[in-house]
Length: 114
Image (cartoon, rainbow, N blue to C red; front, side, top):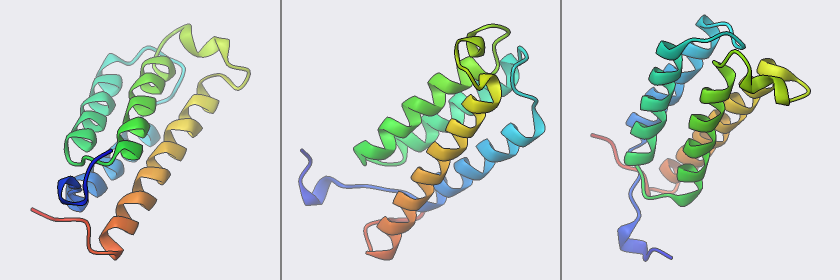
């Protein structure tokens, strides 16, 4: 467990990256191969992970990267009953959870901005 002094969270980077992920999801149809959208989402998730030491947000970025790989695959999404749409909603949920956590950190004075 990290001590109080080690906690870092850059609210601006996280908020901007979450917004960019949401834009990519809305502009790119899930369920079809799209390596460019997958790579952009993966890069943004990694940027979020690097902007904080918060382990919960770190877990959510892993979920986003995993789901992006599946949602923009021709076949990986088929193992889910809701298919690519279900996976997209999971990414949206992870983004919402990251945003909530980052906003909370900001509200209690634990977030920084560059």
